[in-house]
Length: 281
Picture 1: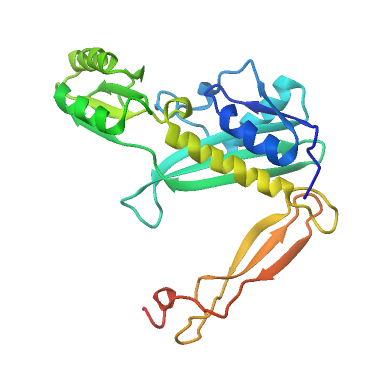
Picture 2: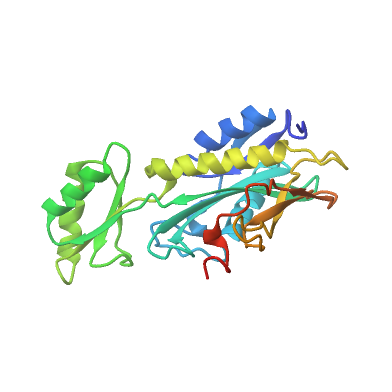
């Protein structure tokens, strides 16, 4: 276990309450202190309610937040969190939520990324009926989530947010409907972290993943972040013995010195034939 961050200050740039789940995961595992960096509006880098498109990739956005956290706080270690909701690349009919938390350690010259991936905490409805919108909101639960509404379609910039009660939904629905060219209103779960506890739970998973990586020590230089950087396919099919695309070995790598080590997985059970191109062409 690495003590690289024991007693160190880690600056986190967030304005949507992510410190509530990131700080406990990192402080408990690493003995560090996570502090919010102040003085920057992260919505200028992109919004989940789509008024401001994100520039660059998800990883680039998270890295930019970590670098800004360093600049704003004066610390030499920064944290940045960024999420995405997209169609799953293999299961095109399923929405997927990926959360990244990037640690940039300028003193060591390393970057380590925590990742969590799972079903998207999202639902939406296009309707001209407030009764239908009310049923939708009740099913998704005001207790746990906030909602956003806008006239006509999911890309209309006239969005109303922070809707957490039936009365607020009624008022926002009526206003959006009055602005609508078709009488329809787009109602959706707010995906901003502080309004979506299911997404916040996935951010906590990403923080736990980052903590585990940072606590893992390189056997060569004893630096933090020695973790899987590559997975090698080739697990033999348990029926025919031919190689499949399933993982046969994991390659661990150090972000500081570049040391790599390959770990073979237990191949005694073999891969399920459903993953074999010969048995399941």
